[in-house]
Length: 119
Figure (spheres, rainbow, N blue to C red):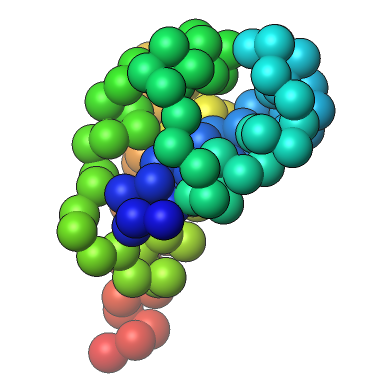
């Protein structure tokens, strides 16, 4: 399969896990077998656009959430970073703006401290 199919599958997997869903639960939401979800996530099959649309709706995603970071070659480190950032996004997306600003402020302070100790 293509790198693109693998990338899309990895993005679907990370978003599914961030939502706390199993492959079986996602499959039930979109009326496709768990085994097919697994093959999509492994990049072993091409799916039709209507299947992708149903998956995106079930995961409450916009297409840009899946495609925005696609590069021809994704390093394992980049993929891991994206999965972590996806998790952070899911933790914060339904919070109030004030809560998000507070978390961003804490993150800046922590990163400044880390950078200071690295020098």
